[in-house]
Image 1 (tube, rainbow, N blue to C red):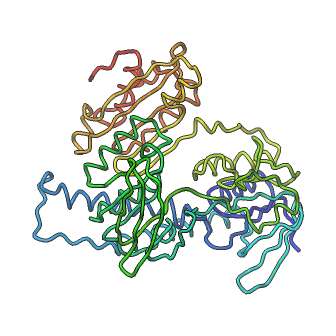
Image 2: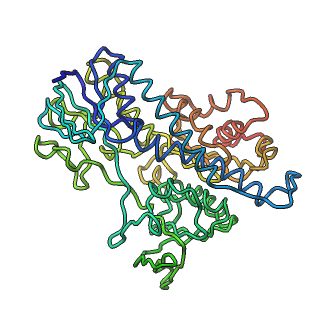
Length: 465
C-alpha cells in the first residue's frame, strides 16, 4: 500500500496543475484518472473545439467571403472529417504532454475509478476490476462536471446530443436546434453554421450569452443573425421528440407555440458536478443543494485534509479557474503563502465568431452595487488592423471607478478579443488606472489599440473616435 502526502482524484486542469504544484513544493503526490489524462477540457472540450473553430473560420471565409479576398474556385469542397481528425490529433498531443509532465514531476499516475474510504484512504478500481488502496495525508477532489440535460429528454448520441457526443462527430448536421445560448451553444452555433448547417438557437432567458454585458449580447445576436442563425430568446422548450427523420422541438416564444424540425438537437443548458459515488457523504463532506462541494478560500472542505478544486466546487466552471484553484490548494496544503481568488474578476471567454471576452462587473451589476463608475467604449470599425483583417465588428468597453480610475470590468466582442483581455486583467490585478492603460504605447497597427482608445474614452479623450 503506497503512502502519499497528496492524492488528487481527477487529472483535468484543476487536478493536474494542482498535482504539479504539490510536487514542486516537495509533496509526494499521486493522481487518479479513470479515462483521459488532461480531463474533459483537454480531450473533449476546450482544446478540440478550438481546433474545430479554426477550421470553421476558414470554411466560413471560403463559403461566404472568398470573392472579397480575391479567391476564386469552381467548386468548394469542405471535408469536416479532416477537421475532426485534426482536432483529435491536437487533443491527443496535449494529453500525452500531460503524461510527460507527470513523469517529469515524479507524480504517480493511477488509472481507474476512485472511491474515498476515509479522509486518509482512497481505493482505485482499474478496468480489469482489480482494486488498490492508497494512503494519504490529503485528498484533492478534482472530478469535474458532466453535461446536464432537460427533463424527459434522453440523449441517444445520434439525434439528441450533449457536447460530448457532438464533439466526437465526424460529420456536421444538415440542420440542428441548439438549446441553450451560453458559451457552449454559441460556439457550436458558430461551428456548424460555418459548414452550412441550418442552426436554430433557443434560449430561455432574454438574450444570448445572458451572463455577459447586454450590449455584448446584442452585438453577438446581430452578428449571428447576419450569418443566418435563427435565434429564439425567452423561449421555453416544451418537448423534444425523435423519429427516424430527426427531431421535433416544441417551444413557446413570444406567446406562440412553435415546432422546429431538425436533424439533431444539442442540449447545451449547463453542467452538473461529478460528486456521486465518490464516498463524500460517508466521510461527511458538505455539499450544496445542487451537489457541488463547499470549499473555503483555500479550497478546503469541512473535513480536515480533504480539498476540492475545479467544476466540483461550483464557483466558476472554467478551465483556467480550475487551474488557479489547483495552485491555491497545493500552496495551502504545503503551508506556503498563496493569494485568494476573486471570482468576479476572473477572465471569461467565448470563442464564437465574433469572440467575446470579459471580466468584472457589467454596467448593470455596477449600478446594482451602487458603484460610481465611468464607461469608455471604442469600436473595432475604427481600428486599422481590424479593417485590414476584414473583421471589424464589435467593440471594447471598459468600466472604471469614477474617482480612482481603477478597473471595475471590461467587456469585449470582436476579433481575437480573448487574446486582448489579459492586458486588462493584469492591469486590474496590478491596480493600474485607465489613465495608465491609455498612457501605455501600443504598437500600430494592432487590435490592442482598441484597449488604449477605450481607456482614453473613459475620460472622453479617445483620439480615433
